[in-house]
Length: 429
Image (tube, helix red, strand yellow):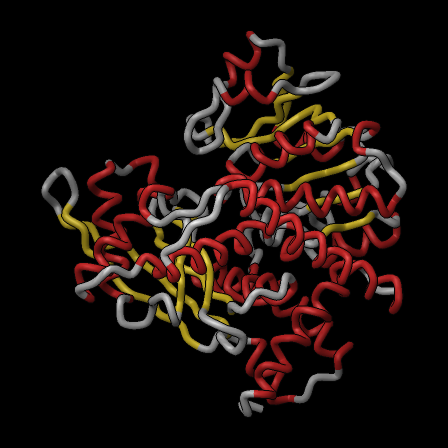
């Protein structure tokens, strides 16, 4: 699941934008505003480690655009984090909030670190140090962070606590992904995976395919994949394999079982980072295959739900001809070269910033609830999420049919046009 050397996600994000900017015939000023982040912050985070020595970690926060509302986006901890990854993810967040029509802009944060090798106290030091560096430019009305890769509710709570200590008050709307008992929203942990399946359900309906007659192969076994698998299987679909990263071996494996994997038994042998115990899986009757084997399965649906740059010009041609739908749970899993392969094969692609927007949509719901100090029941949250995701899908699908556009291009046209109009209405261009 590692990225190819030389791959630059921000260059890919800009390439995707440029194509749609040409379609929309955007003027030069609007292009320049939207093609690059409005603000970027990079800073050092000194932390006293458990051995008594001070180690300095590099942190980032990128605010891509806030024309439609406060910036919104996660904070990821990753040893290979780069500022270009953060820039790309911030830009994609702008389009994601826009395509599902919630009043937020795009932001993203990160720290170069590996939580696998850090104690809880050291991770707390990074979280508190991160917000100390950035406390003046984030907040409920300006920029609202959230969990992302290798961060969780506990990390968010440390950040919130430090922010409130700095500013001397309670600001639960600063951050989303909090524990439910401390201002978090019910339904948040399910939101991204469920949102993915809500749009997949609508796509299958449009294609005349019944979920109970379909099969899927999934890359990733973290929060997004786990809940997507759960809801997809409840609709009657079969997942025959999942691929995930093995921290011990520093490589990925595909775990396959037919006629279908059993979600509960895999969850019982999964660590908190979504890694499956290889030996225990074998004991349960799973085939353990190379990491990229998920790509070549004879299934109807592929769900990349791990990291960027997984479906490329090299890997896409290896995908089975049986595949009808690619549902992108990850951010930026498909390169423009892979998109060309999917166009030629008439594969129905549910683009990432539409398909995985359930997470930011529910984060928006959490932000609203925190700011008004009134919280909804889980069914209400998930019902609102279903309505938002279904409406967004049909808006994109209808434009794609009307203008004979690829689904990704149609989603971009809607998203970029809304942000460009907001910039124009504000008098920025």
